[in-house]
Image: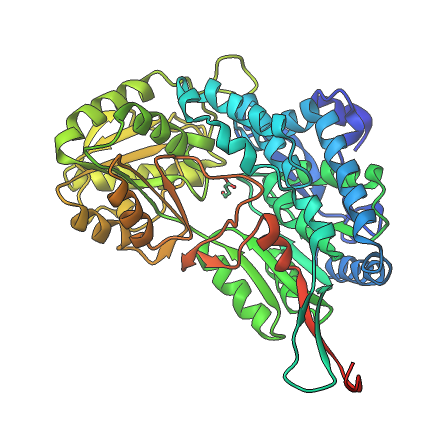
Length: 529
Ligand SMILES: O=CCCC(=O)O
């Protein structure tokens, strides 16, 4: 592709738009010459193409990562930390362009895409003001959410993923054997395969990559075919930041995804697989990685309950439901999927939520005033449609929205009330802008409903009763609980789920550990010293 083709993206720095994969520090096409067409989900217009890579390119990328590991794993933690900070600064410097790329290929409005870039960069380094920027973007997005900001939040963000590079401490364990010492050290695990989804084209890469790089690992990344341009721009910035050839490699694929994924999970050289996506795919990859007993981090599907008790602050609960349900047009793995509201406050909550949702403006995320973009493709729209129709057939009422826009990837932000327990939405993650409200009577009943699912990523609830807050937080079968908040995501938290939502934790000190081996060294022969 020529620079004039890159100019359709309208970036200040068009050289961030890459139409090739990235292997061993070089921009490369597929051996076959085949291409994947990438479209803008808001307009269905073609944005450009990337190579349809296969087994040969995947092996080459793994080989490059393996050669690079020899040198990269021996660099000092301080050196890796400094390069990660360079990466962070470049992501911040090119914020406008990276934001625009996310909107163009994913569809989310610019204000949200900017929030994603800030979030994404924060995996490299968290600045206090950068998290503040993220919340500002949410304020614009949701109206009156500013009440969610409190000073304690900023203190929590003073720990950085890049900073964790210099904190991979070992241990000394007093020995049970006379004349010996037990020392435990941490070593980078090796080549890492990273497979990411389209809902966060940038942040789901850096959440894994920053920790891998900080630990001293090298990586082969397979971005999703819907949103490869953000990934390729990150590769370009990693080159500018000074990461050596082969440390970061990107293989783009669509049709060959099965053979590429299999190689990424089964190749003996790869020592760790990190995946974010659906539970069925997580299970497949887990099975493949088992053939060589690789370490895995799997962040899979959620079906988050969002519970409003009648002692809650209803204003705050509504603000939180808006963020929690409609962020990314509902295409976020931690989005509320089932909203349970206690009988006494049900009518008020339902009508006020519907009123707020009726004021959303859907459209092309590049346009001023648009609050919500399209879904990623028509298949995603069809799933939301199926869930709405099923719930309505089973007795639910449409309070607002309920329809798709013809021949497009847009679905009206929707609120359904009186959704029965047997509706599909209660057992499957919708991944769309559909708030499904169900009335409940007692705490015991709602805990049973909330936990009645095979997955357990995030769960949220609102209550001002301190005893209940502790009780419910402990009883929810999820990896992450929002108690009086609908927003959890930060670079420093242990992000991950229980049950069929996955394995492992990403982010902060827990995240870097996933990319390291623990080694014991027993020093003997020390006599009586
Ligand atoms: O969709 C998965 C990740 C969402 C987040 O990090 O907030």
